[in-house]
Image 1 (cartoon, rainbow, N blue to C red):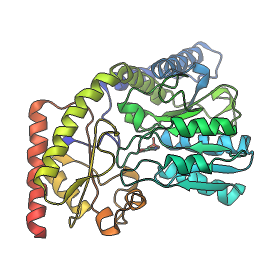
Image 2: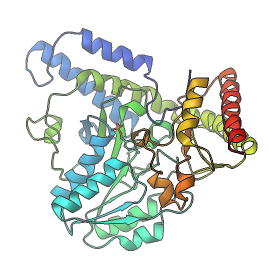
Image 3: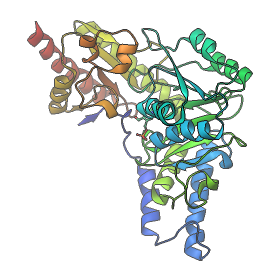
Length: 385
Ligand SMILES: Cc1ncc(COP(=O)(O)O)c(C=O)c1O
């Protein structure tokens, strides 16, 4: 099976698996306990925190471990908004992951927050002028995803962040998709660290285990925990840590980030060649998202007249695991809200198809991917004529 769904979950890296096994086989130990097994657990936790911080240009005190990207986004939105309400106003976009959009809905429903949702153009780029105009002197938070998982488009946050800073608003970015395949850094002066106060990441996009992630947040920003209880994670997230998952997460991030630039180049070359073959040879196939400002391993299409779900089933049978869009919306027949926000008609928005490379493929695997995909899509094209 050729696995082309890294944006949903990347394959587990062998070194991450090994780190997890070492923790699981190493005997009991709660990182909050004072005895020797507790100290060992604490050392594992500290090491993983250091790995995440070093790989992403953060300080260890800025890393709050969570149970994944969804929780990191919930913590960024609800935790920051509740602790720093200001004018109870949030600026976000129409194409955010559901964990951002639903957190905003929650804050509007329960906390009386006003949410301004900024639109995007036909390539999924946020309307910068509209975002800047929406920021008010009392805006609480601006939250804009760094890259969209469904269409791959990468945003430029600098001017919007400048306006937010001038207004005294905090800036959060959901970097869950971008961080795994681009050389991102939270360091001030780096990309996107120069523009943001908080950044969400998820372990399973780096080849770590599912169910671990982190919110990176600047020191001194007040953060109300989502989970109340013990004092873990410097009081930002109560509950005994998922040590094995966090250990695997740390190792995966440390393995991926130093080669992020070279991996990006290699995957981009293959991705571009793949996109070219599909749009040249499948009638009606169009790339969605931005042609160049997009994550390097990401190819997404709409193919008018096709059924996204039945293409996926046939690709699966032929040995290619692809996706119709975000994993969270897979299985739903409704058109992609992101494609609708970009101006696609609903009958086109249901035909979304996404291929995301986990790593650069061998030449042989690449040829197999192209051959199989063209064959399956070609059969669909013949059937719809
Ligand atoms: C942009 C983005 N944010 C957040 C998430 C949620 O992350 P998790 O699956 O770790 O909860 C995803 C998942 O695909 C994502 O693509």
